[in-house]
Image (cartoon, rainbow, N blue to C red; front, side, top):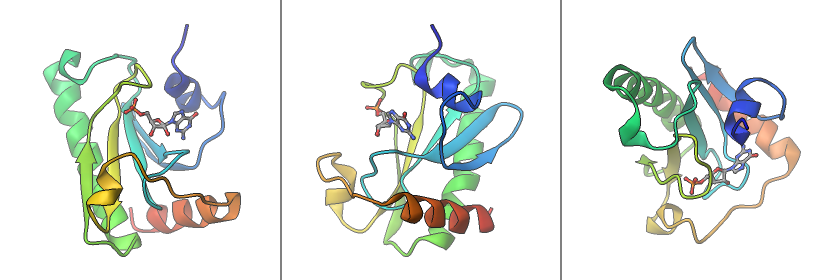
Length: 129
Ligand code: 5GP
C-alpha cells in the first residue's frame, strides 16, 4: 500500500504544495511545530533516510536546501532547522522548521493554523523559491 506521502505526491490527498521537481516534492506539515514547517520527500518511496541510495540522499539534501532558503526569506525566524525523524510516516521526509526558540524543535508544541493561514504561508514560501 502506498504511503500517505506517496498519495500526497500523486495528488490523491490534498496538501499545501511548496515545490516539486522530477524526484522530490515539498509541502507544508499538517501539524506544524511553527508556521512554515515544511516536509521534503523523495518521490521514490523509501522508509528510512539511510536506506536511500547516495544520489537520492544528496538530491534530497540539495532540494531541501533550496526550500529552506525560501522559508528563511518568507518566514521571520531565528533560523531554519532541519530534522529527520520518520517514526510516524514510513516514507523519508526532511522537516524544515522555522525556529524561534528550542521549543520549535521539540515536536511538543504545535501551532494551530486556519486553512487561510496555511494557504497564505505556502504562497509566501513559493514566492521566494
Ligand atoms: P515523523 O514521521 O517524522 O515523526 O513525522 C511525520 C510528520 O508528518 C508529522 O510532523 C505530521 O504532522 C506530518 N503528517 C502526517 N500526516 C500528514 C498529512 O496527511 N499531511 C501533511 N501535510 N503532513 C502530515
